[in-house]
Length: 419
Image 1 (spheres, helix red, strand yellow):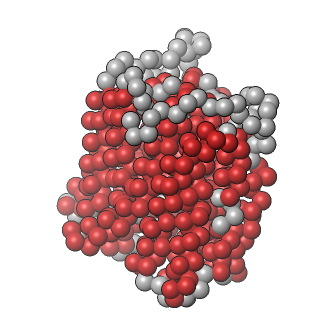
Image 2 (cartoon, helix red, strand yellow; image 1 turned 90 degrees about the vertical axis):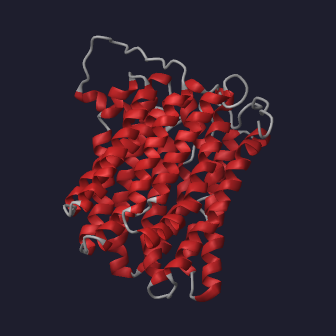
Image 3 (cartoon, one colour; image 1 turned 60 degrees about the vertical axis):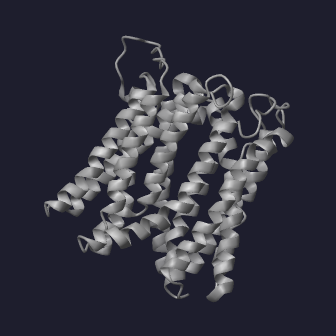
């Protein structure tokens, strides 16, 4: 549990999540950098590597959801960690043998993406079993803080490591992080419950692959959150490459300034994740979801007005800080609501379907916004994404469908700070 009865088990799960998350952020854009620096890949090949790998991985992860649902989750998480470690290590091995190709990088990207989705879906199901309902928000808040800490520190340190030690450094470090994560998961200990399949003798059917989407779309509590989060994430990520083009190109910012503009605002994610449970205690989760969900949609339009020089850099930092702080509040509350409203025997399928849809939407919107920028310019395309984001709060749930009330009843008392 997070506090009290068995703090060690959650602590080891958190350690596994943290070390693998930091490894992923440390190796941010590692395959693209390897493709450019080692293989002298064409820009089209680099773009395909960035878009196709995660999208195909998401498709491959979908059939794993129904299978993982009725398996013990900890062995699945350990297996995905070891798989990711093995396929990542194949890259430096092939490099040492002078046999590395863009095709191999693409295959590794697909496998890692599928394993990522499966791992995080299994983590959600395991967390729901491990942590009491009243402590889920605390646990999700800690995961959220870990994400933003890794995002703030990982890419700059990874970039420095590549400069000092070569392009394979971050790939090897990422592989090592999954090995450490597997060790931490073994240390979680305890017994893992294997969920009983309703029809124990039934085989997996093709229709079972759609169970996650069926449950999401049939749930009045989850359906609006699904459409809102998929669209918001897609629009934010679609404009991200265009901001790189605008800042490093016409506006003349150095790459280190661009990195600084996105590393420093991650402090907002730490602040937001720490505030989330206090805000829920005071206002209720429904109100926090609506206010934070609405607020996070109001910042991105400001990026269309970024100019050169110090003032432009400060504007980007302020906008990103506000956006990330709102996300830091919203995400733990959203993740907790999603777990609370999903039955234990549907968590993996639901989270797998959610992640696969989100990754596919990001890939599609990124490609679409690239075409839009080619026609109108990056600034106009960024502005259009910001305008569309202003409409996304309309998709947020207006009340808690489990209670039928506009606000939640008073939450359980919070555990002692720092325990």
